[in-house]
Length: 322
Image (cartoon, rainbow, N blue to C red; front, side, top):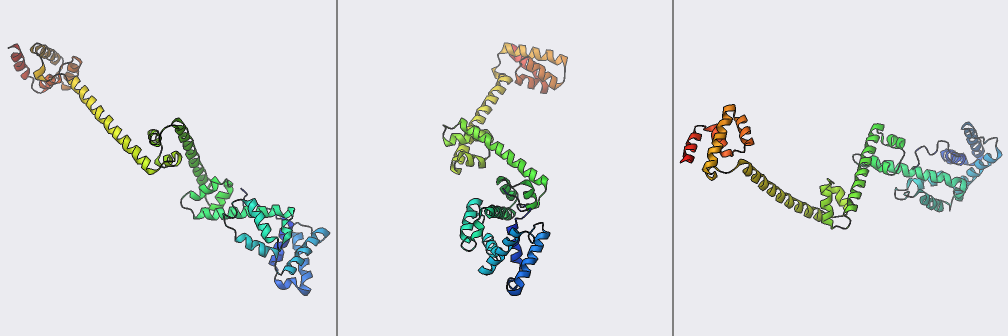
């Protein structure tokens, strides 16, 4: 993409036309015509072009003036009007746009189609495209304008100056775009792995890999209905997994707790009570008692009694002995 500095040094023909455009119509008639030509030649000399003492360049100036007089208006008046009428859609392809523009204006100004001028016109069209893009970018919300110009490979210095943003802001947006592109590359790889699966299976696979809904819709090319169906199926699976996990946790808890008091055989009950008493001789701290009882596989129901109503152990023991 061309920059706004496409014409750091304008070509002679364009400078000649700009000087002619700046003249009043009366300066191109009668006794004022020749002085006007000489004045333009002098100004071009000052701009670094040898015109007044260069026969070929002076002829170019005279021919341009004569043509403007013949047509009745300067070349740039018509040319600038056509440039101003261009839209961003018109200049999407600068070379094609240039060809069309030259074909239209050549009816009056065929000299613009000469090879040495066509290149300059292409640059003007490219600059017009750039100016239109910057104007559009300024109208977009948030960082969308910056993104538009980055995606179109506009030079960084043109973006910062055109949108009046800092280098740091531009770098931030570029980093975000780089991250987004990396994510899209990751999702593309994920989709390759499930290329032969149904749309719902693809969506579920991407959800499991923490891909956003927006990116799933864009890259998997599915609609919201498929997204909703996949979500519902996954939610039902999660509920079932949770139910099974809770059942397993309850089973393990019950297993760890041991049998209920009424299910403990008398001989085992006596052994458990003896073990508890031995443990309680080592410590009277509930936490320590529970840890040691757990290590000895003593049912929790007995441990609870031991730490809350230790005197009830004697009662239970007597009952077990008959």
